[in-house]
Image (cartoon, rainbow, N blue to C red):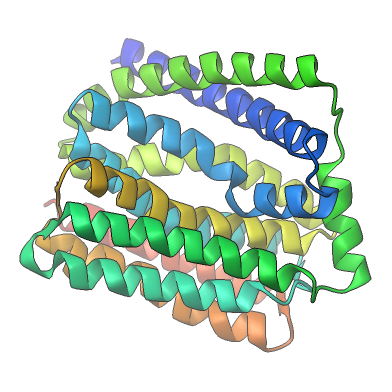
Length: 316
């Protein structure tokens, strides 16, 4: 059992390092080839932190562990909205200035609802997977179209986030190193996680939903706490909402487009509705005083803990 935990922990460390390296490389290459620092930073804030989860899920699908990949993709959203935002807001109030985050949160709720509808027959087909991927392209277009409406302070913060070296060879090296780290990180996580899940009596689906989703989110929780302390609430909320959209539209959509994906009835009845419930709770916070205070962070965290307890209780 210690060996399984060792592989799992090592894999998480490599994924965190690989995710950081590939984000810097992508920012540098994007700016090298003409993207503005603001656009590069916006895309990295929205989708960059999803790459470790994407690596794990791609590896899981490759080795035939599609249920674990599905659990990780959906579970990561609940972890993002409950654990990451909740802990960050408990440390310091998360102040939101970026106007596009509220519409993106609505799109996240709609994407979750669409997946519920697609899964009513017990499977997400290839065509439905392609619809989700097209939905991501539409979200990307919306994101870029709304970018020009952000105020100067938000633009400055995003551009500062994207600052990095633009030397071509350096960023190609970052990509090469990141690819190796993500590959071996995903491999080690998937070497240890099934053994841990089996020891705890978890199915592959619940293994992805709980230990893998929570484990792969821990570096993001740490980054969110540091960003909240620096007053970078837009970075925290942008990472959470963008990553969740990426998980549903690209990760789940891509898996289904590659191979029709069974969607268990429990996901239609419990996990996806739980993700929508977090969206509904979070929306008034973003639309009201544009901040998530410590009390609201505590509520998000308590709701997340309640969800984990419910999932574990249903195993009995």
